[in-house]
Image (cartoon, rainbow, N blue to C red; front, top):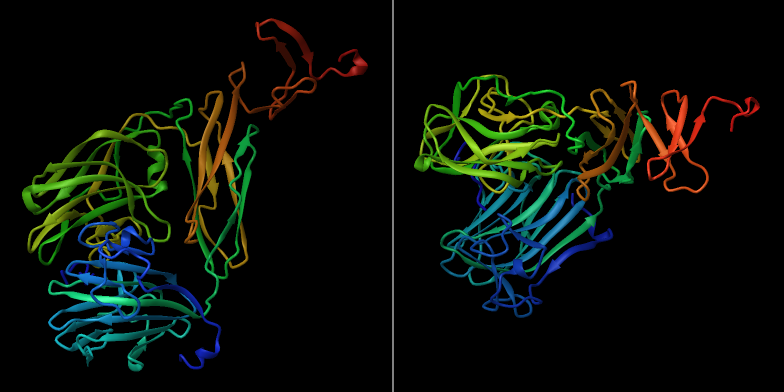
Length: 545
């Protein structure tokens, strides 16, 4: 998809001697012609993720460089192949490309899907324009109605890219350079075949090859073994990084509604803004998108056990039709934060230049997990709809999406947070478990211990359950959950005690483990009859059993 700028509707020498591994190849001949490729292959996706509809390209027999089939890209098709976000190694991407007379064509390669474009090529009337960050975009001639062979070589270790057509090098440059200029991320993200309005072209024989392997990415080694405790002593969760790159992580608890234990009323407002609605942001031209506040676990935790019943947003200029749709979402990824599953949504007419309160149809329970709250809207031309405060921008808390992915909004000159607030009702749960450290980095081949601490203050007797969530930048395992059960017993003297009993059932020996002194143990049968009393501190020499 052609890039729409946020806030603006604005070397390889001797590699042949190295071992090469074909990571992926597709000549499209194994698919059924006339059907979308996305319904026949999981390797290709659309920009939005939809498997059918106007974005999904069809398999065609009209042209083919090899075999009978090729991928036909027409107007509004938007196809993505992901390279796996490589950050090291040397790679080759090769494909054949057919542009009929009179047709336009376009493809790009991205560092970060939907966020950073590495370069793009635009085709029209025999001229290809290369946008690669150069002050003046270079142009090249191509022949219409002929299969063109493109080679793209990327050396991430040396931050170098080389583009060739028909065996002739067209250009080489610093790979991390952004399409529009400036420095970007040295990462091989994805290929995008997009269909402009006057468009009908074909792709065949797509091959993705590893010329030289990179270092192994961060890989978490963790055993998800449930933790059960009754003593209240600290517990430890250990995990390692078997990769060759550092692994960033976070760790935090989420809680179940165990016995509905409450910690007192905290009705009020959950927010990150400073309480005012002092400014607003607009996009040049009409724009349809979303803005959201990311409420991290440490922000949610004081309101755990309460329910979000309404959302309050600051609106400056009116959006199209004077409507917004308010959303509450679950969290997305650790590597690329974003809103995921919709928990609640509601469309409502809003008033300009003021705060607007939208009542949710169903309340959303807060359990300590990260949550995203925001709204979708269409902004008219040259309008400033989205309100924000005038405080220093809070890192990692404000996001916007005017395309397929969320991008962090860092304010205007690092000032401004979205005017988005959650009204909560009810009483909160006690925080009976904590995890330390909350964040950190595990070196290559290193390990990390997470210490779990327990607090039985204000807890009634019973079993309390929850999970420790460990997030990391392992692409195959971004989120890991460790179940935890904490058993608390309240003694008759109203002093909170922790007791473990095992095994159950038993026929001979029964163990009782506690942090407090036990004077006597009484044993009852299932009919409630006392069958034995034991003086725990009495010795055999004293005539006790």
